[in-house]
Length: 583
Image 1 (cartoon, rainbow, N blue to C red):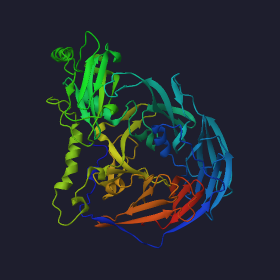
Image 2: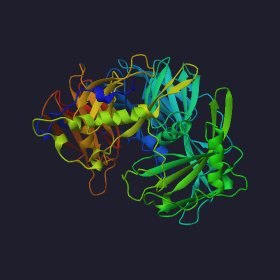
Image 3: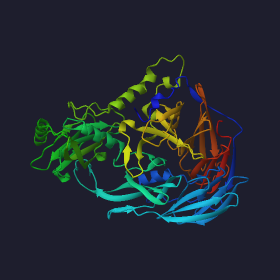
Image 4: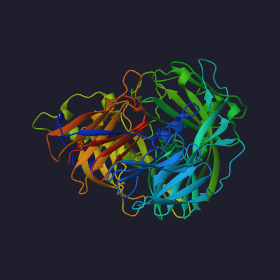
């Protein structure tokens, strides 16, 4: 059974379009901050670190819904009271780069460098108290450089922390024209993830990508673009395909790349192999005398055949099915351990990544005339077929889905893989076939909604997690027609959220554009989309934020209040948008 069965949601074949609503009931109230909110410098941050930071909401809301908090530019924790009137109260000062997250109705967790602070607020008296705790130490290797810890989530005395760490490693060989097979050093970024329970470390794991989703309980459910111990979703496909292959090599592809893998004995090292790239050829050459390529099943006939393939130069100057961009092609060398019965086999795997010259071209084979099929998970194939069903149905009237779509019209969202982490840090991760594509998470509010909006073709499906925080099947609750198609046109939109009312009958999707205001246009657009169940038409609104003054600065955080107002924290302003949601 798939973990994220988006195809079980009710389809929307009758839907046609979103219509612009020109309601005059939308009002914006703007308040100047007593001091600007903190904006972290990004000049020295890598791509993955920027991704992690983009997911950090600088404004947090407590259970009262009228009580919020942020860190200002002088590192003071600032409390925002929305009732009976909007009021800003400066509290305790912290060190630079402090992050925060609400734990419960009156407690905020602040994370600064190597310590966390539980900040308890009495809303009636506006008094507060604070308790500081050191963050447990995690071993750091000499070649690693660690960044500051950040608080990702907090719930019921549990706090999830994350920090980026950079480490130098022998990189994959990078080709520049004919000069390939050269090694160089590069900095790689991964993430330490730690769960604290009552200030004590409960477990610590590592991941190649930052956490994008977290449900904290005795068993925790985490979501990210990759799972612990794996590098990327593409790597997962490749390693699983290797285990099931009896061919001399295995391969798979994405819209932009071809990923080719060959297995070697553990005795063969990276410097024994040379890889050269040309626009229509790849050459894998041996730099050793006794080479043997082995299959993971250790069949004697296959071993002998593979050894002969290398010795006779089978992979030298091989013509490719399509054209590639040599400067963007790379290869890497990895060590794997497989098990057949009671026997353990140590292997080395050469992974070659080819950059397609013509993106989104589907290659039927890697090498011309080679009869090695692409490795596709059967469950993925079933999902592909199920996804085509709606296009084979006869519709009795005009529909958005009957119009001709370009591939880029649905290129939107972020890969999403789930991991279940037990109380002792043991984890179980979803297979690649259970991966989804996230369009939006629920907007920060109280109580917190742990559902997510997943992509299904051009639509979106709101998926509800299992109640036991385990790696089990999610439940499709509602469809949002054509929302993936709409969001694909908003390349600069960030953040993107969805929000449901208390009985979940109304779903609003919110998109803020652009990510950062420019010198020529200092305002933002807030797009709101809503569709009633089984409706032919949806409603949309476009709300201008910061149009009056234009000096609000960067958008740092968004929260939905208990009165269904959208509260936006900018660098120098707090803006409350009333009447924007369709209720």
